[in-house]
Each structure stands twice: as structure tokens, then as C-alpha cells.
Length: 388
Image (cartoon, rainbow, N blue to C red; front, side, top):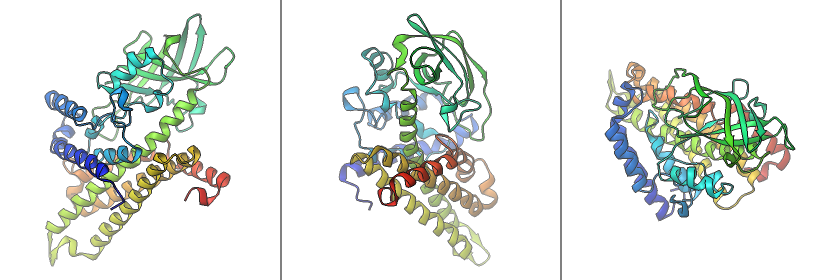
């Protein structure tokens, strides 16, 4: 099915077995702030690297898996089957950095990240600049052989685990004043402080704090690429992450259909199993149909990347996949809660956890509304036949 090769099926199966072994820890993670016992966490992270399931998006000469985009999607789809972000240990380091990193940056940050010895986070979003990062107010001023960075960043995902941050800012002076640049900031660092750590709907071990960068010194060697190119890297990251968000939504939806279907088959009501009720059958049928449609769309879009399809077309199709898969998964989660009934409202239930966790997929890495604007813009510029 879906025209997967033997190699595709092999890595998909390997990822599925890995996540199957993580799933029994979900309830404990839910009860402990999303965290696994330290020994279990270390063992599974090491296993992910040993089995070639971490850094699948990175080139082999850096120690990554060198996988196709379709294979990366297959791995992340399986990651999405686990709640509490346990599947995030199947890491996807910043592939966009490979082509512009200096030798110093490769040795100090990039290669250690691929090896699992360093962890990145993105300090991009601000209070008044979310999906549209062109509205950033953070600044970078060149002072001699370093930059001075100032700004308050929101939703800095995984900050509590990170050893460095990508900080995007508007250049305040120089020939590229007004354009964007991206910098690497080691963590912890002088001038970097957590303003507060908001509580979110989901229960995962990765914090998303509001972080202030106040007169933070960044040597010229910490500039990523060139001045004026910061937006290019942000957009490349968004495009990739939209594929990965869509993939994880597929995994979540598959798990929900499987679990809700099994429950409905076992749950006895007055005149037989719950699955015999036509309205329950309709919810399961709609969920399975939407999953099939979303999976077909995402796999086709991923193949387009592997085939070298036009970058703007890739961008539009990544938005289509993220839009449809995230909204599909939300509908599936809602139906699953309904099928489970009162059990579906209990935090020990997979449907309840996914009901909370999947809501953010329609927000981060670009809201559903932003995806629609991107898709419509490309339709106007390129026409229907180039996109669908």
C-alpha cells in the first residue's frame, strides 16, 4: 500500500516497534509532568540513536540517517502514535543548517546535536510576532567583533533541555539594517533569563517558557550564514516542520482509530457491542476515511521533495498537508473521546491526552489560517495544475 519500498517498510517497522515499547510508559509520564524515569529516558534515547531512528533527516557524513523525506515522514508518523511527546526522542536536528554552517559551527554545535550530545531550541516567536515572523522586534547590533542581542521570545520549546538556542533578530545597523539574522546562543548565558514558564494544555517534559535576551553578547562566529538571511532559515525550518507535524498527526489519528475501534468492539451496550451502533460506526468510518486521505496527501508531498519538485510548490504542499492533517487529527480525537464516553474524559485515557495535545498542531509552525493564505497565494501565482 502507498507504493512503499522494502527499505521504506523496514524503517517504518523499526520505528513502530520502538514506539510500541514507549507507549506503556504514557500513563506514568502523564502523572509525572510528562517525564520518564531517568534510566528509561536515557536507555530509549540511546536505542533511538543505535537503531538509526534519530537524526534521520541529517546526512550520513555527519552521523545522520541520510533518509529520504518520505522515510523521515514514516518515522515521525510512528512517533506521533505516542502521547506526552515521548516520540520526540526520535530527533530531527536542523537540516537547513548543514549547507551554511561554518566548520566551527559544525564542530561545536551541529555534529554534537546529531550525536545526541547537544540539544537546540528556537527563540523566534514573540508576543506580537507568531506565525508572521516578519514582525519581530528583537534586535541585533554589531559592536566590533560581536553582536549585542536584545528581545523577549515566547514559546521557546524545549528550552529546559537545550544547550543552545537559535535567536532570530532584526539587524539594527549596518548595510543590512532592517533585515533579519540568526545567531547561536549557548545556554545558559549571561543576559538570558526565563521570564516565566506558562502551563499548557498538554503534559510533556518540554517546557515552552518566555525568555528574555538582554544585551547578550554573540561573537561573529555565532552568526548563522549571512546577515539578511535569517528569514530564509526560518522559512526552511517551518517548511520542514510542517511535514513533521503532519506526519505526527497521522500517527496520532491512527492510534485513536485503533484504540477507539477496539473499545467499541469490546464495550457491551443493551443490544450488543457498541461498534454495532450506526452512529458509532459513522464516527469510525469518517475517521478512517480522513486518515487515508491525509496519509495519501502527505506521502505524495514528501515524494515531491525527494523528486526535487519546485520549492514553492513544496512549500504550498507542506502547508496543505499540515493544514489538513492537523485539522483531521483534531476531529478524530473529538470523535474518539465521544466513543469512549466518560472514559474518554479521564487523563489515563489515550483519547483524552490526544484531545489536549493535538489542539496545538493547528497553531504552531504556522496557524491553519496562515496555511490557507500560503496555499491561496500559490494557487493565484501558479495555478491549480501545479499544486494538485
